Image (cartoon, rainbow, N blue to C red):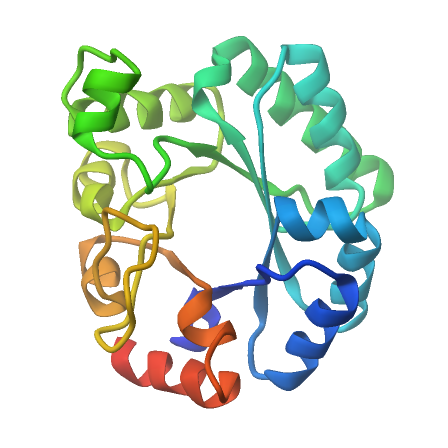
Length: 236
């Protein structure tokens, strides 16, 4: 893949009109992330708009529910031709397996490729102190993330969303075929914002990430297209 193809740009805007304006402003971006804010505002119409422009879609809705509900949601999402789809590993093995089977069925019914399901290991806004004191998780952060990744792999999922700080460990433990998608990536010239566990794009790829998710450093720039090219150059 080219550097540009490994970058997923987050469409973290509140309306379909703003999203399409941004997509058309940076035509060289091939892969876009649709998250909760935009999907709640625009609905599945934004997915159709992106596919009409021959874009790849990372649908980042982080499903977390009982197995039947997870399955129904993944079945529906797969019929829109999304490429990557997220769900929380903490939903458990039964829910993850049901989601995978439903996504396969939904894609097959629509005559589309099966989306790759990605488990959320731990949100990149959370820290070791947070999981110890707020969530009362008795494991160290790297051990907990590895456990969630192995659970996802055992459940038949194609990869995980993880901090680039854990990418090297997960690549070694889960093998080369397991997809690692990393938010928490900030170019050297950008502010970290509300992400707590961040590295640069080049560092994330060196650690084993397949795809990098970058939002505000590109989308909030005065010239988003120039910012995207700057990130591509930094990666190279």
